[in-house]
Every structure is written in structure tokens, then in C-alpha cells.
Length: 469
Image (cartoon, rainbow, N blue to C red; front, side, top):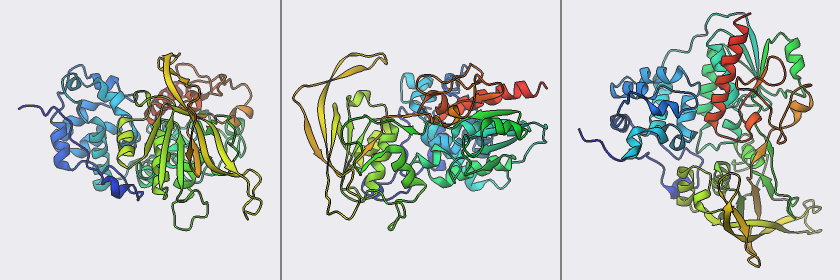
């Protein structure tokens, strides 16, 4: 039977419809489409796709189960190595990981591994009746700091081995960046909640509204009987450009903007935590978070949204799919330009506090690409005399984040690098005995799946140490 050279398209909402709602953009494969896509898998002997997955999902095996129509069997295979299959199927950059290694991709488009993973997880969530069963306790206790992807993965892997695991989350909803950083239209909160509930069925306790470093310290966790601590607190400290005008009202970090929208319900008609409504918005940056912020602003009622990025489309780091969706929805990409000043005004008669003024625009300078820098990308260079202004009412800075210094400042002997990332060895162990770390708290902002991989490494190391006692 001839192999279809192209992967099957993912059904989506029409751009003109989805740009005005927060419902999920991608609608998911039907059974018919999933079976057709699974039939494209060559079931390679050496399985290069598995090596491209940071959590080493047994990809040909789960796709083989789909071919047989055994969707629950496919889910069970994925669950052997992944605690968040419905999440990964939606937000992981498969195109640069497992799918980039797909043998079929040498001649044709690779198998749609991520789309199949999402289908399997969604089928399980809709049809499975039995709950996960907590294994017998092995008598050991482990604390997890942060309920993002690295923390949840570490918790899940340890819970399956009988550890009593407690996850401490600073915010009021578990899920970390999965719930406060990724918009509903890309990752519904109900999906994350379902994954967290599955971990709870395995015996994981989740304590919200607990700020480690303030409510409790790492040392106090050990005093409470925990034998190991995993720090997966993410990178929630936003970076700014330090250009004139960043103190004006209407300038947000992408973290604040997305958290208000996601967790504090700024999308409601009468929000208690208001952010921009209507007007024009400039989002500075070119990563996935920038795409999320721009598309969220559009759904909140912005009449015009710009992406301002200092390199070209080829260097844009966001996933191609997200960029294409943004373009379809009417986001205006201003490439090869960089902000030099945020413009604003002070109006003493305005009933709002006028001390810092309000955004009226953003001044940018055009760029051209010069020689490659340390990252291998061509360095953007300013073109003298090319300044121009964009008329905007809000500016969202999405130029990266750093780990919050709170845990470091309250934990003696915890070494960090110059960017504030916690230093670990190949086993995830920090400079403190029995304290492990992983994910964005170590690397700075990265992908969900890389954070999950770090959580798995730490869980394996913790088990090796504690099980030997």
C-alpha cells in the first residue's frame, strides 16, 4: 500500500471565528484520521523517534496499538514514560524532537506523532472508566517545589514507585506554567486539571498557596520528614529591555499579562483584574510566549496587534504552527526592528494615577542581520537613521525570564549560575545534599518536554538513593 507523503491535517477553528474566542484552536483527530495517520508509521527497528523524545516515549509501540484500534492500550504505553500525555500532545515541539528523527521524514513529511499522542490521551480521558491506583507505600517521603511540568513529572514517577509525594505550589491552581502561562485556546485548563487529578489518584498530595522560601523553607521541609526535595519552581522573573518608558502604565511583562488572563479571568466581561481592552498592542519578542501574548491580546479585543522582533522570520524561535496560526488570525509581524523607547504622556486631569503616564506608542529602529553570534544566529545590527513609531496603547515584553531568586536567597549552600539558574550535576543533584532541581529553575525558560525530561532524571536519581537506604 502506498504511503501518503503528507501527514494528515489537524482540523481547526476558522481563523475569523477563533480570533474572537478562547476555545481550543486545534480540534483534534477523529478516529478515522488517527487510524489513517498511524498507518504511515514504518515501525522502524532502530526507532530513531524515541531517541528524539526527552522522556523516551515508546512511539512505534503506541502507534502500533492505534493501528490495531486499541486506543486504551496506546495510552497505557505512553503513560509508562509520560505523566502528561494530553499536555505533550498539544504543546511539545515535536517537529524539532521526535518527528525530526522520523525515518519517513527523509523522503516525505514525518508521522504526526504529537497529533496521535493527543488523540490517544483525549480518547482515554473521554472513555476510560477506571481510576489510577496508588501503589503500596515504600515508606519514603519526597517534597516537590512547583507544580509545573518538571515537578509533576518527578512527582508522578516517584508516586508510581510507592513514594509519598507532596507537591507545593505558590499559586492557587496546580499546573504551573501549564495553567498560568499557556492560553486556554492552546491548552485548556480542564486538560491540565485532569492530568493533575490522575497524579492525585496515584497518591500525590498537592498543596497550593505555599511559597517555598517564604511560607516554608527548604530546610523546614527536611524538618517535616521529607528525605529529598526536588525544586521545579520554573523561571517566573521577567526580563525587560531597560529602555525609556518601561515604567509607563500599559507596559506588561508577558508573565503578568498571561497570568491575569489565564488565572485571574481578565477575559471576563467585567474582570476584577482588568488589563487592556481594545486599542492597539505591540508584543516585543518572537518566542512561543510572544505568540501566546499576541493572540491573547487579540481575543481580549485589541483592534491591532503587532509582533516586534529584531531578527527575520527564519530566526523566529516560536513553533511554525503557532506563527502560522497568528498570521492567519491577522497578527502583524514587524520583523528586523527593535524597540528603543516606549512613548507616553502624563495627564494630571486624568482620574487615574498620572505619576508614570500612559503608553501612546513605541519607537523602533530597523535592523539588518550581520555576522553570526555565539548562538550561531546572525547578529541583528541597527540601521542608523531608520527609526519609526508605532501607535499603540499597550506594550507586552516577551524577551525571556529568569529563575526567581527567592529559593536561592533562603537556602544556604544552594549554588546558582550568573543567570540565577540552579547548578546541578548529571543526576539533577544540586550543591545541597538530597536537594535536586530541574526544568526552567535550572535552564531558564525552555520547553515543557525538556522540563519533563529533567523531572524524570531527578526522580530516577532520588529513587536510586532512597531505595538503597
